[in-house]
Length: 150
Image 1 (cartoon, rainbow, N blue to C red):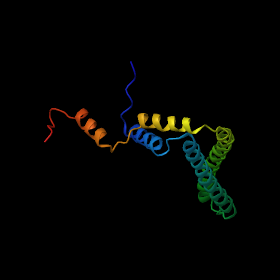
Image 2 (image 1 turned 90 degrees about the vertical axis):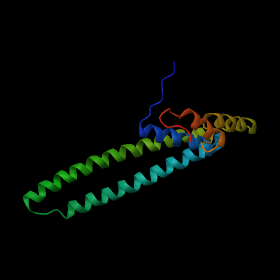
Image 3 (image 1 turned 180 degrees about the horizontal axis):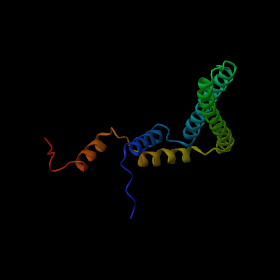
Image 4 (image 1 turned 30 degrees about the horizontal axis):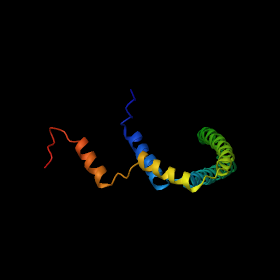
């Protein structure tokens, strides 16, 4: 018996986004392109934040106050920033590894017939939620006795 999908708001948002990506990018080529773009945007944003944090850490180290109390607070803050920088450096390393794997995915080319099969399966996996038949079906499935249809 298949397990029921999670109904929490985060999972529901994920399912909607998952289905939207299948609908909007229903071929192997389009999936390759959107995944590549997402990876590159992630790397760009993560890299820029990492640079800014490193600059901030370096400038804070130069401008450190002489007061003892302030110095302890600054040292704790620097330690926290150093931990975040380390985590972001690890993320970037993983993103470079993913990029290397993605380049292998781009080596795969499929004939138009297979791309058509991708489109067909995409329509089955993630039908348009605004399709009138889908809306009617959803309405029927979600009717409850305490909320009669008017």
